[in-house]
Length: 141
Picture 1 (tube, rainbow, N blue to C red):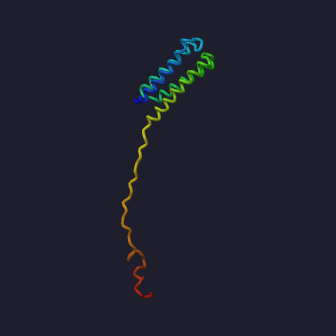
Picture 2: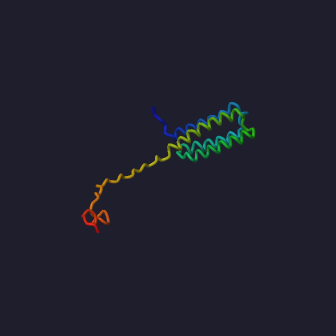
Picture 3: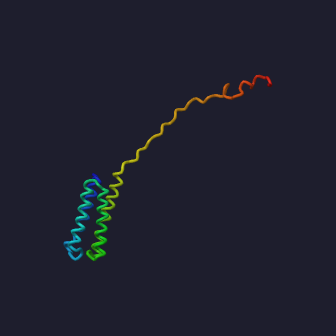
């Protein structure tokens, strides 16, 4: 199976969101025209940024789009059912963008600490003790 690049998947998800918004043509009372145009402008911003691989900007545009949707819903410019469908599409796009953002992060660079080369242990002997010359000669001083 061929996998789409993350930018393509995020852009496709944004298109799904656009389709969710454009479905209001079937029921114009579900979403006011000016609200639909404003939300579609937000969708285009998300899609453009995602297609360019600028996932952070796409996420910011998606956050702004969600804020617009919440404000429009609170103002009665979009029905509850329509708002829920758009929100589901926003959630889908957000999940794809988060995955793309994580995948775009560079992998941590592992550095290996060199292992010290073992040396021969020094053996105790003359010179290792300050009063070596007084030990073992059989004389008491």
